[in-house]
Amino acid sequence: MEKQLNLVSKLSLNEMALRRVIVNLWYESDISAAVGGLRKVESPSGCARSVLWEIVINEVKEKVSKLMLPVSLKKRLMDLVRPIRSEIRIWAVYHKHILNYLPDEDLDMHIFEQLCWTCTGAIDYRKTAELLVRLETLDIEKRYRLACLYCLEDYIPVLWVELPEKYKSRFNEEVYPLPENVVHLEYYWASVLKGEEFKLNDILP
Image (spheres, rainbow, N blue to C red):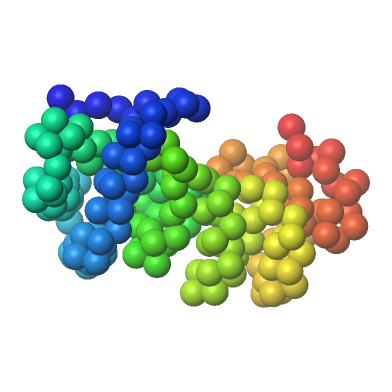
C-alpha cells in the first residue's frame, strides 16, 4: 500500500536517497513531456484527467521497475511515486489563487521545472518562490504576488517598479475590508512601498 510522505526533520540517508530518486524520475524528459501533455488535452473531465494521471504515474513506476536495484528497494520506491506527485499537487492547489489555476488543472512545465525539493522529498516553498519571481516568462503580476506572499524583500521593490500602472491602481480603489480570497500581503507591501502605512489599519484584520 502506498504511503503518505513522512515529513519529519530527521530521515535516514537511505530514505533521503530514495525520495531523491523518485523526484529525479518525475523530472526526466519523457515524464515531464507527458505531464505537459496533460494540459493540451481539450477540456478533460475530472475522471478523464485522473485516468491520464494514472498513466503517467505508471510510466514512472515502469522506470522504477527497470532500475538495477534489489526488489525490496524497488518496492519502497514504488510506494513513493504517488506521494511525491501528491506533494506537487498540494503545492499547486496552495498557489492556485496566485498562479490562476483551477483545482483540476496541471502546472505549466516551466513552473513545474522550478520546484525546489528538500532532502525529505518535500517541496521547499520559499526557495521555489525565489526561483519563480526570477522567471521572466512568468507574468509580472504573479511574480509580484508570490514575492509578497513569501516576503521576499529583495525582489518586491524591483517587481513593483515593473508592474503596469493599471495593476497598481487597484491598490487605490480597493474597498476594505479585503475579500478573503486575496493575498493580504500584496496590499501590505503596496502600502509600504507607497509610503501609506497608515492604510494598514484597514488592511490588516
